[in-house]
Amino acid sequence: MTPLDKERPVILGEYIVKDKATVRAAAKQFGISKSTVHKDVSQRLEKLDPELFFKVKEVLDENKAQRHIRGGMATKEKYAKKRKEEK
Image (cartoon, rainbow, N blue to C red; front, side, top):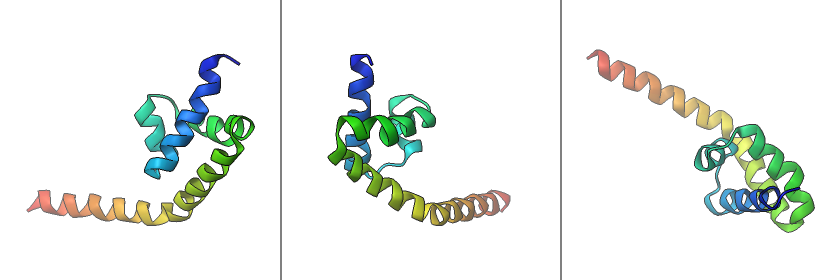
């Protein structure tokens, strides 16, 4: 593992916990893929910083439980915008 491979999972984990961010938001913020973020925080972070790993897991579990609500809100906003443009 390179130094970056050891630092990145911790940096991503701290960002996710601090901002209650989704994997998608973290990937966008750091310019990396969602799969890289997920691998870093779900596999590598557990070995590097177990305490932070469990904090990140709580945030990601909460995000996962709420994703159907966020998806519904996004769809609602999409069609509200579309109706507004048609008028």
